[in-house]
Image (tube, one colour):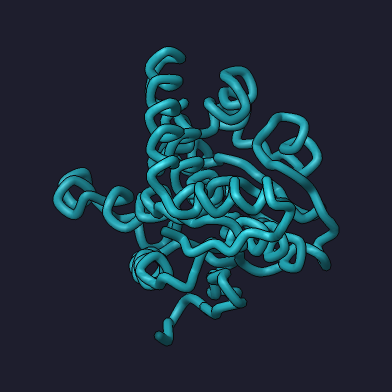
Length: 258
């Protein structure tokens, strides 16, 4: 499919989605969010895709929601159209693993979209922040919730109340990102990570993702019970039999994703 605000391509078993509004620093308007939802659905329904990479440009992953588009909305406008909810949460709802490859600005909605992915690989020029308070509102796509879970209460309060931005290295120390790489290596390193995931069993990778996400929804005992049930369920897959047989016979496994 061709898109107005995105570029998409398949790299083997990896789907690459690039936000493409460079003149607006990839500001997240309704067209982009709608197209992102469609691109995610297309890759999610493609049985030949095992993992995704979501990225932007070298100057901006996404500098936030499009202020010009939302500035004149009223409360009833937001309520009627379910603003921010519809389309925005599609990234978090994707069952296949998603790597966010972030360079430049990841602010406001851009930071929130990145946090909806399963982990973030940051370029050394990346900047993260939730500056919504400086324009008279607050994060609305999970910024106060996912950020607090990722970096803790104190830093989340700092970022959301002051609007300050943190560098990739500070984000790494805080646990917001999983690794930092040179900006010129960002896409290659992110694709390499996604390719490693996609080369393994897709159903089991999806179970891993579901189980880790569950840890943020329930208490420890319920989370362990959920993990245990998925662990048991994995023994009903062909890939579990193949993986363990390959290990014991000292050969490379041949995954059938079933």
